[in-house]
Length: 113
Image 1: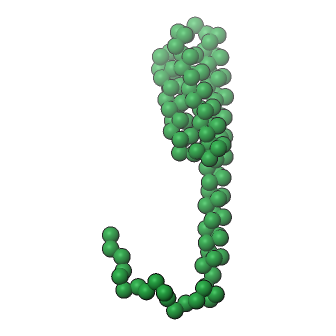
Image 2: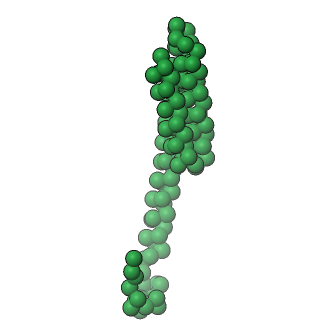
Image 3: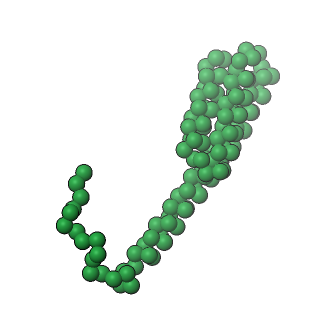
């Protein structure tokens, strides 16, 4: 990657003439909105998958399936609950990976049935 070497860091434009501060404030607000939306998405998805996993675990527990199946659903639901907790605290990347792992554990339980 090459950068221009002929550019002067001290340009002729003064700070009072530009609205860079306004643009920076707008970008910061957009970044804040994106982060908040990601937190809400991770939290909501984790809570929804937790409820779905617990419901599936209870339904499979009352049926004639092996004990591994409801345990897998319950474990997947617990992982998704942890993901919802991490998502609410702003750890959205880790929450996403935990959501994927939780759904995979639940899918394993479904395949074991």
